[in-house]
Amino acid sequence: MSDDRRLFFAVEVPDAIRQEIIDWRARHFPDDTGRPVAAASLHLTLAFLGEVSAAKSQALCAQAARIRQPGFSITLDDAGHWPRSRVVWVGPRRAERGLLQLASLLRAQAARSGCPQRSLPFLPHITLWRQARHDIALPAPGFLWRWQVDSFTLFESQFQSGRVRYRALESWTLSQ
Ligand code: 2AM
Image 1 (spheres, rainbow, N blue to C red):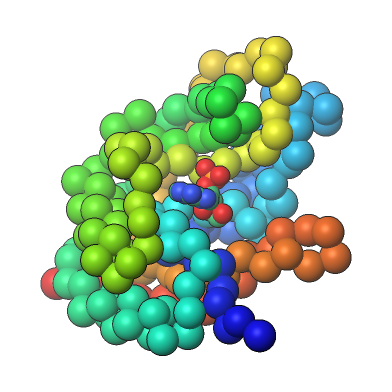
Image 2 (image 1 turned 120 degrees about the vertical axis):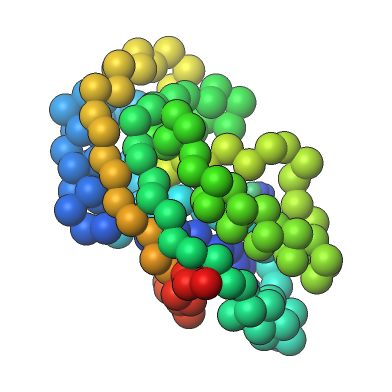
């Protein structure tokens, strides 16, 4: 049996902001918009690794542990709808350099370790709806949520009882 696991690096969203996002979603979108992402699953992906063997994930963790960079803040002040991937998201209008730097480092490490990365530019976002209807009316953002990021986390994506769950495996602190 394969020991491969579906993994990704992400930034966790603080509980209070998670709740505000969920409240905003409930106020502005009807229930039939699509498949809502559970509050506990909200995250901002830095690098998607795909199906990874235990040996490769150990190597990726060792590289992640060597990253030295200060923390940064994330400001969520934008919302969007990507009809092709059928995703509705919130995200930063302008990402801080630290966020872009961390994602680009993790994506480069992943690519060097044999996890192919999409050639698309990194567009930081937090998915709120999947399989979204094509005709949704996107509300004006009208929010500004900001927090200081001082760590990043490796998650496993598991499919259990018909649902996708994300399990935090290991976190690393950002510091010089
Ligand atoms: P999404 O929210 O835009 O769909 C776990 O699946 C996380 O990894 C999700 O945040 C998802 O982004 C992202 N993800 C899934 N498949 C991906 C891929 N092939 N390339 C980049 N990110 C991916």
